[in-house]
Length: 352
Image (cartoon, rainbow, N blue to C red):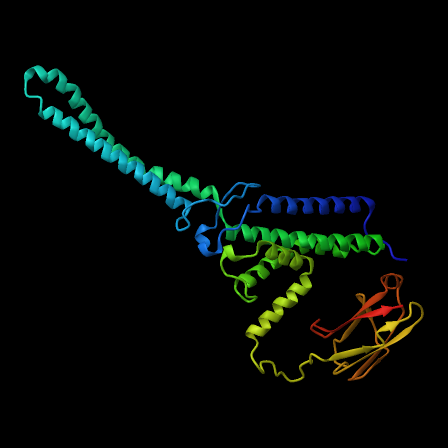
């Protein structure tokens, strides 16, 4: 009789971890969700947002300038205006001094001379301080903003992470509920969400690269569409990986590239009969194809290895009795792999 390799405490801890990880993903998706998308026509230069979690707001500004450029211009204007004003005051004070021609005016001239010296001292100080002011302004501006491309990559990774959490939560509860949980799968449950996040990023980059005819600009991205694809990539990592493999092979595989002698053909296992078996008793399954007697050919039913009763180059016969789990699921997965563990046949056998 099947039994779980996990105790009650382990079940509770796993459940808490799943809930916590899911909450983390949802919380951060909401935190980095932008208030709106910029105009696609304006380009990436207009795609800057305020760096404030739960308040990612598009910065309203001249679309041809980054926020730091605007701040720099403002500081330059303030410094220039200050220099002009001080110079005007110096000229006015000097003219006043030149117009004082009598000794009786010496008492008035002294304060004016002091004012001239004071204004002259302001210029070096102001010019010396201006680079520091500009650097501080640029630093403050940079730390308070985030670009849409960065936001999209964060959201894509989080959506892939969340999508895979849905998958592993379903898998975990199913196996625990059927008393078939194995400790050997614990590492898979821990690592899979992170690999799914990375896979979602790869899918996103492929899409942005133009393989699937999406607009290259950040403002032209359909936010909800890209998030949905990221979640689906995390939910079905195997299919997403297969799709990426198809794209790679279509792009880089040369015609007649692989003509190795004794290569295992893609149609090694062409078919299996019957595709429907009864829930009780022993049922023979016949697999037809090519090179089925090659060393390393393996047959499994729902992951359990099956030893063929008869094997020839073009036919293989296995005997199978449905398990309780397979009967409950009303199907069993037949998988044939070669010596390199490459899948050559996968088929669901219906049980009814």
